[in-house]
Image 1 (cartoon, helix red, strand yellow):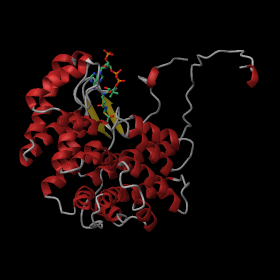
Image 2 (image 1 turned 135 degrees about the horizontal axis):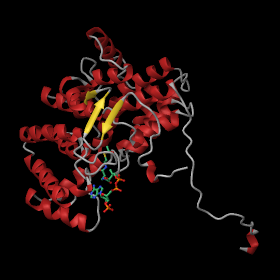
Image 3 (image 1 turned 120 degrees about the vertical axis):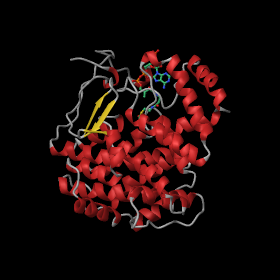
Image 4 (image 1 turned 90 degrees about the horizontal axis):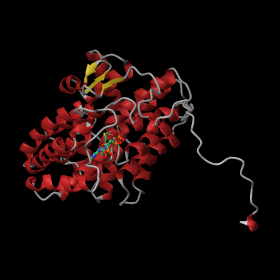
Length: 375
Ligand code: ACO
């Protein structure tokens, strides 16, 4: 049996959801290049696409959007739970706990037939932004804003966080970000979701595991790490030296590098354009200029290793310009990625095989048990 640390290069399953060519910098969702989808589609339409394997007709999309909006409200138990959480809890921990708790109030939490799982996925897709908005305002001592069922997910979540209806530009920018984050092959959190559901466990357990995985700074948590780094850099002129100092200490530069991409992440290409436009519109060009200075330094220092900006690098500036607080960056990734996790859970259940890899044992053999008073 062959062994690959971190399962690098191992094909663990088949999928029809997303395709990545890491050498050429290609990401396609069911065949459509991600840039084309982000330029033309909406988040809701992209999720329908992933869950059904085809783009919706007009009436189907309208029905799907209505079904999501009808589920925006938090169940009373979840609302009470969220309002009883420590105000200094981190929003990723809040989301993980609240999604898990959604299983407590589902009369049939363990159902794994596809229509039931799809129905539960729809509820999680709709309610997660509401949980996020409510917790944010509760911790700040602000009145909770009820979801506006006339708004799509992106505009609505911004409204529930800030209390003000976003401008069409801001709502559109977040919608594009959500599309760009919807799915991405067998990344760590998606793999986690598939591993859990492959035991025929339940969708709440699978998505809870995925949120836990995404939080890590080597995965989705990197977008917050990027912002922390940009805040540490005094000015665009200081970015080069800052980057070189970090590299000299063998520190990772957050938002760079990828297990699969050895060229420019196509999501970063799109986000870079968006970040520049939003930074210009909101007077945040210093952030964008620091980012491009880091990118330029990295291109000279480490591009030979195949290290380029990933999705998290320019999403930090984008989210900041949209007005999101720093610790809501990774939770916003959850809002988008629930679409992809759910698609993978459905795909896994449709043709399940329990994930159970082998391990290469390196410990001793034939050891005799030493009684406790003889140790
Ligand atoms: N900054 C500096 N050097 C880097 C970086 C980075 N961000 N990423 C990789 N390298 C270097 C490593 O030091 C290593 O160099 P060496 O061969 O001289 O020792 C080489 O590139 C290979 O790096 P690995 O960490 O082995 O690559 P791996 O495929 O395991 O890592 C990962 C991918 C975890 C994403 C890594 O690039 C990283 O830690 N990046 C920073 C965190 C980040 O941005 N994560 C978000 C990824 S996208 C997402 O999950 C949504």
